[in-house]
Length: 86
Length: 469
Image (cartoon, rainbow over all chains, first blue to last red; front, side, top):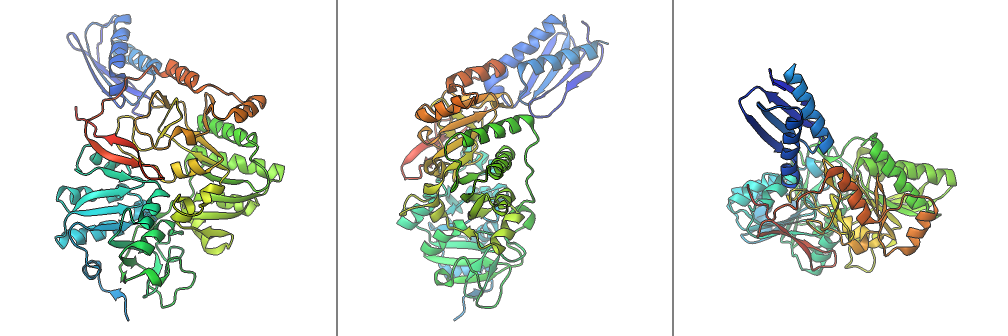
C-alpha cells in the first residue's frame, strides 16, 4: 500500500500507543516507549511485520508506546496505514 | 523561661547545628510540607555542610534537596519512602553515600536504640503552645496524627517545634509534650492544606480493580480470621479502598464486630468505625479530612506513635495484633518477595513505609495488584529490589487468579474448597506473559545508591544506580 498523506492512530493514554505515518522514500521507524528496555526490540519487529503484511515499502512511521500490548500496537499501526493510504 | 524564638535561622543557631550533624523531619504534612524546605534553605544560608537528613518520608515537594545535595549541604539521606522526582535523581547517582531506607517501624527502633542519633529534630506542628506542647489535630494546617514524630521528639539532642498556630499555654489534648522540646518557632505557614490531606479518595470504578477487591474480600471471608475481634489495615489505593467497602458490607451483613482498624487511616475506615465494624481505630497517620476530624472528636479513634504502630524494638507493637493487611506491589517474584521501592526501569519511586512491618505482623498479609501494568507483568522471576521478604507475604490477588504462598497449606485448601480461582504463582506468571510477552531483564548499574534495611536491622537488599543510555 502506498502512503499518500500524514495519518495517525491511537492515543497517549497509558497502555495505548500513538502511531503517526507519512509518505517517505524507503522505511524509517522511530520508537519511543516506556518499556523500551523490556520490549523495544519486539515492538520494532511487530511494526515491521505489519508494514510488510500491508505491503508498505515507503513510509516514515513514528510510534509512541505507553505500554500497549502487542495486539494494540498492531491495531494502531494497521489503522494508521489504512488512514494514510486513503 | 521562654522557648519562643523569632525565626528558623535563630532556632538552628541556638540548637548548635554544625557541619556533619543529623537533622530529622516527619512527613505528616506529606506533599503539602513547607518545613523541610524552609529549614534546609536556612541551613544552606548559614553555610553549614555535610548534613544527614533523616526524614520519615520525602515527597515531590522536597525536590529542592537535590540542590542541597549538589552543593554539599546534604551528604546523607535516611528515609522510609522517597517519591519519584528525588528518587530518580538518587538513582542517577547524585549522592555519594547510599541512601538508607528503613521501615516505619525500623526507623524509630534505630532512633531509640541510638543507631541513628539525631542532633536536631525539626517538628512541624499544626498547633503548639509556647512551651512546645503540640498537636496535629487543630489549626489551619491540621494533619491529624503526629505518630512519626514521637521518636524524634523523645531522642533528638535538640527539638525545635515549628508551628503556624501558636496558642496560649497550656494546649490541651497535646500529642507531643513540652518535656522534650527546646525551642518553638511561629511561622506564617507550615504547609499547603491542599497537599497535607486529600479530600475523599474515590473507590475504583475500574472493573479489574473491582474484581480484585471482590477476590480479596472472599479470601478474608474464607481465611478463618473474619469473626468478632477482627482487626484490619488497608492502603489508600483505589482497589484497596474498594476492598474495604466490600468488607464493610460483609461484616454488616454477618453482624461481625471487629476490634480495630489500623494505619494510615482514611475516611473509609472512619465509616467502618461509625457503622460498628470496629470498636476503635489506631492511627499513626491521617490520609484525609474525615480521618482528621474523627481523630479530633471521637475518643475511640486513638493516635499512636510509629514505635507503637510497628517497631520491633519494643515489647510489642500494634502490628503484632493485626489479623489482615491489604498491601500493594510494583513487582512480586515467584518466591513472593515484594518490591515497592523501584519502578520497572530501576528508578527509586517509593519505599517500604509500613509495608514490611505490617506484612511481618499480620496473620494474613495480602497483596492486591493487576496481572500487568502498562505491559509489564507483576510477577517476575526476581524482583529488582526486595522491600518485603516473601516469607511475610501470604497471598497475591490479581484479576487472573489468586496465588497463595505454598507455606500456607491450610489456607490454600480453604480457599480452593470455597471455589476461589487459586493459581500457582509460576502459572500466573506464564499466564500473564502469554498476554504481555516476556520482558527482557533491565540493565543495572554497578554502584549502590541505596540500602534497604530490614525492620529488624541488617541489609535486606541494595539498590543500584540506573545507567544512562
